[in-house]
Length: 252
Ligand SMILES: CC(C)(COP(=O)(O)OP(=O)(O)OC[C@H]1O[C@@H](n2cnc3c(N)ncnc32)[C@H](O)[C@@H]1OP(=O)(O)O)[C@@H](O)C(=O)NCCC(=O)NCCS
Image 1 (cartoon, rainbow, N blue to C red):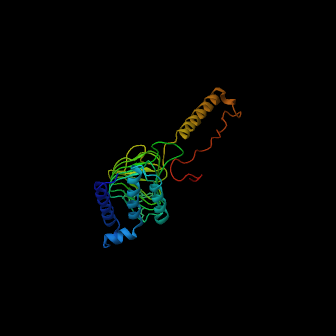
Image 2: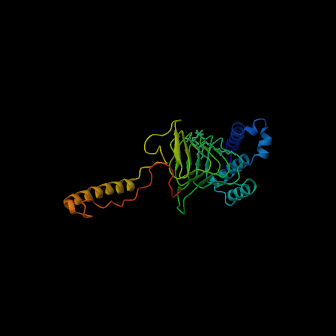
Image 3: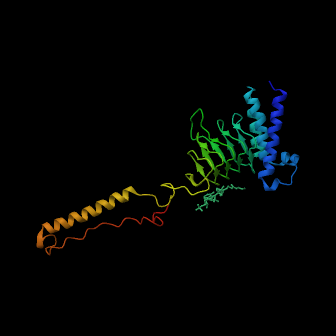
């Protein structure tokens, strides 16, 4: 069931996980590998997940879940034993991280505390995100559903992501939207999320001007004694639409 090759693979993976902590956590730069293994909850969680994943893949009952449960109690990081995790995953600080059953994580991914790779409801089958290589996910970010986070993407702290994320992009906000793609601000209709087009206001504006033109035409047809008796049409009572620019007085 388990051979020397499995052991060698797990040892290699653990080495890369420790190296990842030293590379990506400034606080771990001068710390030895044994201390990192003993003190870094993110490294411990990934280590125990690798063991649980191998056992789960081998069909061993109960033990993988038991390992995941104890790891969660100790580190605050919950990784389902079936989740696929690539090499060099680094979970900084750790607490509150949840990685769901059908999540897939590529190589050299960094997660901060409070990240959720979760599902959106009670669907079965593939329902958790796929995170490609070299992605960084900021603290508190929620990535929900069977979406794909393209390689090299950065997800800002507290972002909520429910759609695919293009490679090499930076995504922030709720709902998460790209603010950089390949280092440049995205162009097109998604570029300005504050001053969105407002088709309803445009339609009302069009109707207002048509009504104004009709009132003038009716007043002219009425001749010099039309409308108010002096030939002057009553002023159209059209409320001004809210300003297209600047803050919405209704808030939001
Ligand atoms: C998103 C992040 C990775 C920066 O990526 P980046 O590609 O270097 O992007 P920038 O810093 O140039 O920011 C791009 C834009 O997004 C905005 N932004 C950055 N992070 C944001 C966030 N978390 N929420 C909302 N907006 C954010 C910036 O203000 C900037 O806005 P602008 O286009 O109006 O100038 C970083 O801000 C972040 O959130 N990192 C997570 C760090 C973390 O969780 N640390 C925990 C340590 S304990």
